[in-house]
Length: 242
Length: 195
Image (cartoon, rainbow over all chains, first blue to last red; front, side, top):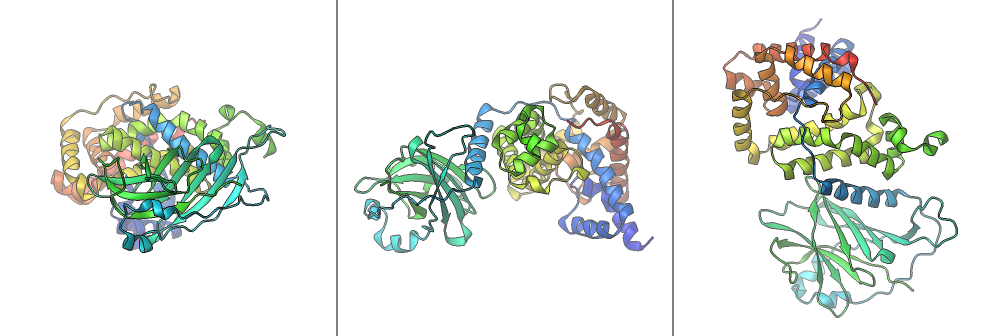
């Protein structure tokens, strides 16, 4: 056995319980790739660590956790569904940016950078739905500065839109990402603050979106409800029905 | 595979459900969530000590399962243990952020001072055979081994930090961890019931 083997063997238990540094973990994993003895030893020690996970006192999560999680999962499941070959909905371009007069005009040119839109209509998978018409669902890809990306699932028949955006910059204390429903000639209507679902992911469900022209996200103080006070971080056109 | 799709998800084993999850089956994922959400939330709450933070962590871990079910390998163990290892890794990352340092210190003091709570495995929905193994393994663990594992697994401290904290040689800390894990595995690993 080598010196490296002996050194790594001493690190296996700390790695099994996440008590090692990243450098140590990388060292152990590299060695374990080549050493079946250490690989099997680490697997056995991790089985011991699994017992610790099961030793905690029981605590019940709130029902809202499942509701929020499943909303995200169902929206993503719909996005994974294969898209039948149907003609895309006719888009009627409107100058909805006129509705954003409360945002500085000079900033608008650079702020509405997102708007990468891939529109296609997919039928919701309804199993034995038969010949009944399927609700219309439009999936919109969203991107923005700094690698911001995400999806908007627009369900006009249900008057809702699921918004899932990742790689947003951290909002900072007392601030959050607010979703706005934009209609031409009207003040932007708040759809509420997005729920942060991970280190850089945010999700929201907007209602009252049927016939709206666009959705936009701004960084706002958490007390804000009236009107956007900052430039949109990301915005996306919604398709218009024929 | 066609037979798999025809079955009621409630009757499928976790491993089969993950196949369906990988194909975008939200109902199969919901069954996985219903089976394991309590044990996941209990671990998250034990790690972070805050309901909101724990729910964010659980959501994060389950979404990782939903989006990455293809990376699951039965060789790593049961689906539940895979889920819990994802959750634990991400929970430790959060514990180690600078903002959480004060909370870690407080948690460390609690770990050192209090006796561990008796596990309530039955309430976690864990199989009776498994629950017996958990209790047996924990009861058999010498206090110094349990302390080292608690600080590491639940406190998020590295072996170096634990060595300094307890004023023990590094080799002693690593040895206690290893002996503790081996004892836990002997009292439990061979009798695990995989759903």
